[in-house]
Length: 174
Image (cartoon, rainbow, N blue to C red):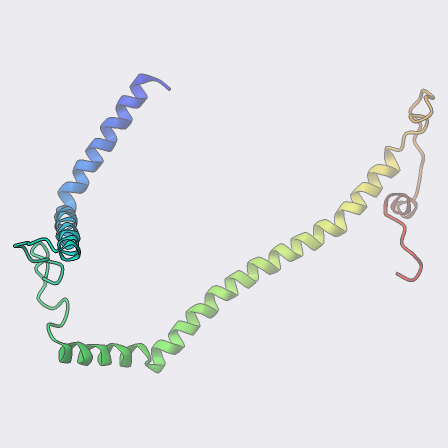
């Protein structure tokens, strides 16, 4: 690859990275905050395990200072149980249940059509290949190649005779 290509790919990736920072700056700030919370938690557990004195508190249980959402999570257990009860009553609603299974059935219908189409195509190929081979055997039969006799003689066989010559022999009871 040329040097010009590598330079243009580097420039494009750099511009895209800067554009992502400009558009999604809160996610990068929240990632930094999460790393700080993780570091403070690890330091807290190490200090607790080895009996080291510390003067900081882990900030994992605090709300994010970057994302200021008032209605994100309930603040106490009673509000949580009320919200969880409302959520599960909506989740187990009959309309949701029937809508979910209708969507599953739609997907399964598409999958069944694809499988049926593949099975039909396989059956078509399975039935077509011996016929094509029989036609080729019938028209391109060369005698004398195994014995060293020169010549290209065509034998005019019927399609049934050619199929008998190509297809394997099965016992009479099969």
